[in-house]
Amino acid sequence: MPHEFLPKAFIFDCDGVLVDSRDATMFFYNHILSSLGLPPVRKEQEALLFSLTVEDSFHLLLPGELIGRAREEMAAFDPDDFRTRIAATPGVKDLLEALVTAGLGLAVNTNADSYT
Image 1 (tube, one colour):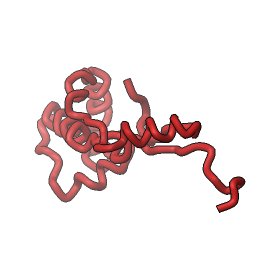
Image 2 (image 1 turned 120 degrees about the horizontal axis):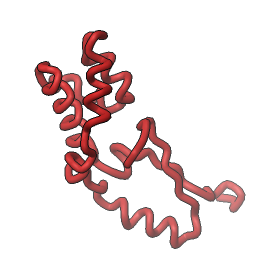
Image 3 (image 1 turned 45 degrees about the horizontal axis):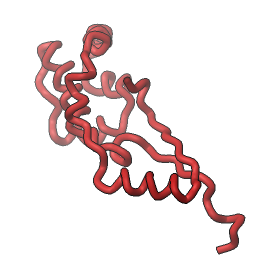
Image 4 (image 1 turned 135 degrees about the horizontal axis):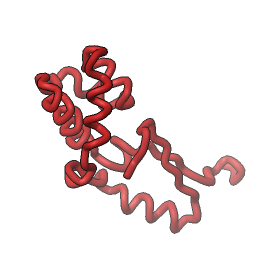
């Protein structure tokens, strides 16, 4: 492969690529649903919720009149309650170290509103 076609950097998604956050994501949504007196996420909803933004997920899961309350619950949610539920994807640390050692740039792109 000609040198000019070799990558100079890699852009990674965060959830499901760099970290396994599915358990934390479902914990978060189930916490919100429980606080609103609603049943937990159904298994068949999990994959879709994992791919959506929080706001889009709220619109999927909740009646419109509860979305404001869900946002309030989210604002009061302690991120420490689910940090222990997030783990690095196996092998990702070695991969990132190898890319840095090779002098390649790294970046992360995610649909999350914010990370703490």
